[in-house]
Length: 600
Image (cartoon, rainbow, N blue to C red; front, top):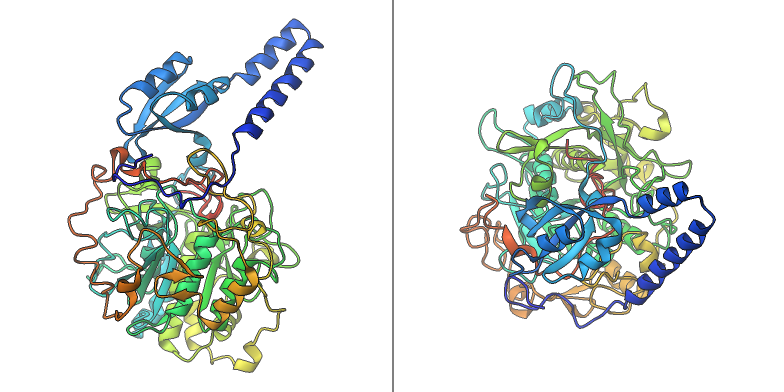
């Protein structure tokens, strides 16, 4: 099948298994059970069962290029109704009888039919703050004491923060000549020059603004560390879909290239997480973040938003070595005495809870106009430039910026010392149980004046991770799905290569997982990481392979909703079918794996 860009969909010559037969059998079995049950029911009860089975459900229908009005006609023929269009994904919302979904999927011109629940807000609507908008970054900075470091001249300058996310968009506040550096695009969109590196989902831009946004003018927008630089490693596509193997490759890249000419990656922000309950000692994702930590990078991970229905932290926040962050709710006031742990924040259990918390309720950061979350959550827009989001994603970004400030103030701090310094100076939230908040709300004013903790007393002695466990178990219930609805499962990467945890863990630790444009011997298809794009190249300022953020990469690109509308998105083979909003730690948009509680 051809994409909108005239190229074949990303298939990598691999099929993840034919799921059609099991699904048909499952549907037949369910139907048989219902029929047998109905035989023993009264007529009124049978009618009730029938109405339940065939009730109207809300779905998102995506169209193939050149489909015309065929999909809309198919919906109406099935007894459904056509709702508003979603130009961003070349689709529309529809209400259809549940029994018609499979038939609709097989209709001419239909690319996919997915439940609308994936993009419904799980959080409560924002009813406004009682006194002040504590979600504004100026107020967030005041709550955590970042403004006190600014007054002393510490802005995070000289510190690079690796952002493993959905890319970054060229918006005001991130346009400085030395603000964003592109790492590799490891997402399913990396094959398409039109969107390579760019944030089509909207999450990465929001995080980048919180971490290091900077308008460069008095009174303008400012992130927690306005002088820091963001190294963007794109792993998620326009729906937020990504596989654990892509995230592993992104972490490996950041570690291996942390000290390249012109780079100084000291912090890594990861809002990704799964509901895996595999031991942190064995889990590959857990091992990857711990390896980064032991190589001198402060790894900040969102704890999660209880979107999986459990209180335990997401993976890899389960690893006790790294810095797991929960969300606090300022309750609409600037004073911190009344702050509480946000209701959506994963509380952890007796074995592992958050290390610290930071503001994560209705945080106002940069808007990625025309992106997926922007199109699907218009009520979250704040004026023309900004967007409001809640979740441990936002909290993790706040702490990543805080770490950058401390590392500029004291460049010799180890990751263990940064963690210890934040913990011993945190403020206890008296209205919330200790286990839910760890050490409490970070307080940079206290941390700035605190004596540097001794390395020996800061050293953590948890059982080290090995990474020898299962890649499939690391995914938990979050799987990417091909165009035929088959999940990527088992001990294989997105290329179909057999996963060898022993070989990978050794190469990760020795810093050899990446060789030029190859990760574990496999060239990353579709991006510029070939032999001629890495060899002889250096990180000169913001230049990568000749493309800078003010030149070729963003030249002529707009986010007005027209450039990225229509069937631009229809070339991506993989989608994130199980992403109902918890994995990118922002749990109300398009995926369980990104820890944002909502866009509100």
